[in-house]
Image (cartoon, rainbow, N blue to C red; front, side, top):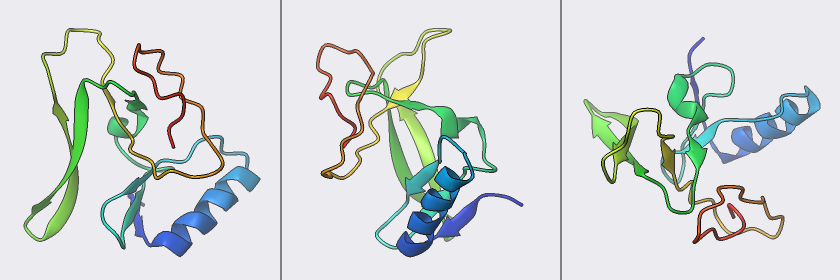
Length: 111
């Protein structure tokens, strides 16, 4: 199976199930208000791109032939062996996820 396209309720259920199954990380990306892509169990290497508060790339959802795609664009020249990062732009929540990007302008949390 490939990646899954799910809604909010299914994404929340999957996230809880992944925790119960001992899967430490989930790879869920919000495409729009109604749609989330789940690449936790199958997806390309882009799912491993880390968050950074001052990233060198940004993610954008574009539509190609009526299908929404996530595209990673560089904001600046990227050197060989330089890590590719983007701002996850998680919604603000009470339960904070610490940010470990270590940049000068780090916000301290992902959300």
